[in-house]
Length: 282
View: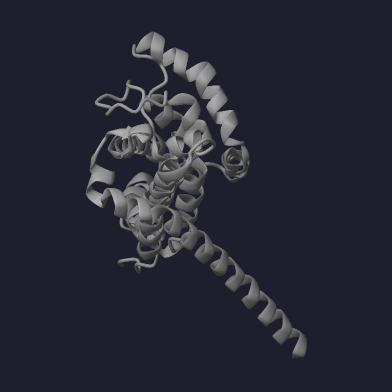
């Protein structure tokens, strides 16, 4: 009895220490970044594309749009593939094949991001430049690299959601004369919709927060991008590139960029949590 109480309090302490670390990180980022936002003005900071720290201009619109290009592109490439793999491994593949594919997909999450960036820089960027034109390093290259990086998140959560659908749903649809694909499309996927949407939102958060691989393949140009073949700068890549030598307002502006990124990722995480808790409609 006493041992169980000790273990319970230790686990509670660990949980609160994790929350405390998150709170300290949040306070530090906001403490460093909010003064610059107040000084420049939120509207000017977010909706201006003039980023010139030496002249006191801090506008991150081009970085926001660059992040959107890369993130949306990653979802366009990654979501259909990830959901398709999840459907195949959960519903159609032999058990032995599913057990072989699942660890391989999860292994993608363990590969360092710099390796993805190196492969994209040496293989993907020259192919884009040769076959599609443009400088090569571009939003398209970043999107394709990130599409592979978000696959483990989308596949694992979507597959778990599909497998969690009660067997009775499938048996009822098959008993009514539906084919296996009709059962999956009209019964299983709608029932697993909340989990699949959560996986997509979490994958979006993973994509928008990636730094090293993005720095290596997007070109890091501060101009407003109007094509996926143009070089772009994302919020994370700009922080990674300039933090080493930034001082004064420049440094505070990078923390302010981190505040914007932090808010975006928190909104995505909360959205995923809310969606995952929605009851399955019967």
